[in-house]
Length: 450
Ligand code: ADP
Image 1 (cartoon, rainbow, N blue to C red):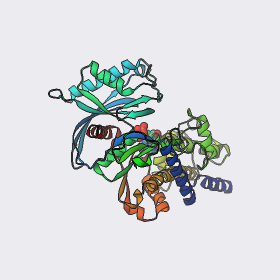
Image 2: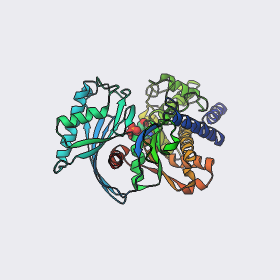
Image 3: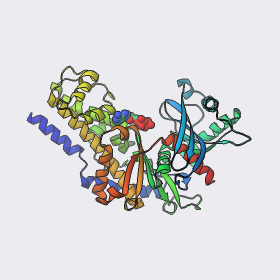
């Protein structure tokens, strides 16, 4: 109907990131980067990672990686074979809920038991008194104080082990290893974006940036130390990787095109007023934004004849993975879209027009996320000048991996900023296992440059 058409046109207006807006956001983001490099406590934190030195893929050796921060903990052995080749073995261990909220010592003793049994299981033994170097990915907010020291700022994601906040997780881990006499040294404490950059760099030595587009979004890039105004540490290396924490961008709400749907999601989130950029981009949120738009159209009786299903009436039921399926649906009747709406979300009847409207809403939100990511990436490429040279960006995360045309939408955005030349110079690729391979490579660099 005419009313439906107008409603969709309004949504197109609200959700489209025009080329001009993309460039405005890029400029604003670049300013925020410079502020973060100059001073602590800025919108984009720009945290020095203490990771210096570059990889060229010729590095060899065996390292361990430990990934703590989700439902499972993961131990990985990583064998670097040179010429960009890597083999890995990994085992996942379930962390019991009681350990997540018990005494910190018990949690870390459990982790040490897992590493011990991993060494047995994979018949990894060391001769003499050589030790294994381990890279520790600990995906919680940490203030890093050296390559293998930091303090936990707060627990997140259902963890709340007692006596840890303000303490060094590496010290807890090393003590637990020592109690069991494990021949393992924690060589590096690693942020997952930094790990992603390193993992990509082993195969693509011209890597300038590592990005996560998964549950959340964030990125790390290679910076020249003289440009890090707030850095007061060693200056004997030329470059250092910066963990940007860019999901926090635009706390001032001065440039992001927030719609009422974004404001609503933010208000209902556990961290209202925070991570606004992340909430417009990351996998955790896109489905819920789409749900908000669909419910609004239903309330205005412009979709599904004004009827909602009990499923769609609940928060977080419209998964971002559904959006990938709907985007990829090129059947004339939109049959996979129908499956999601009628089988998964229990709508009794949907018309083709309903399904077309749903697809259109999904496309607007997905494209907006990719184009906002492009403004962040182009800010970094412009700041570093790397868009003019051959360079690679490694991206990890299910959103980037599975969402149709996320990569080409990002590249189109870069072309709007830099022109066609950037297509030849900058390649964007799926990075492998930043928290495993990347953490191991971080342990290698830490050992080499200490
Ligand atoms: P994490 O970032 O926690 O390490 P992932 O990279 O797997 O883990 O990202 C998980 C996020 O990716 C979830 O928010 C989920 O909604 C989203 N996701 C999972 N599958 C898909 C998919 N097929 N398409 C788009 N997003 C997806």
